[in-house]
Image: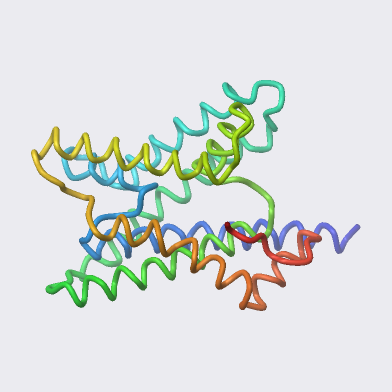
Length: 226
């Protein structure tokens, strides 16, 4: 029993660490100035037009994701997932902290921008691996995709692709509406969409740390991302 309690505490600790790493990865990708990741595209475009920060808009968007989950799942909704609200607060806050910490980072040419972008993708992928391995909670975006999957009966991967494409299309529409050009979207959006999942797969298959965290949740291996 004591060992189980210790494992649970460790799982939540690793989950929290993963969330903080995710936030820093999002900030790095954003600072590359080539376009942020699909999941952050809507908040980022809004933050370029209005006063609230990227973290503040991220909080609002994720709160909408959280509210939609019980609406879609109804009796199948697990109340423990209400803790996503706490996750949302920490994640959104640390995005702004990370953006401030990286305030000095202003890439001056495409080569440096690409290096920062790749580093951001690697960091975000690592954060996702650390966050998913403990198997404790869903982050709001992933939770909504899961709810949409259950409600529609379609495959998770297909719903995830449609979800990301929808966010990018909304961001594109807002960008054209506010600025009459692409702003906040670009090559980095495409690259991050293609690379982050590959980094997750790499970490899950090669890093002993991820396997160790997964074992705390009584799983033989970290979950593989398709």
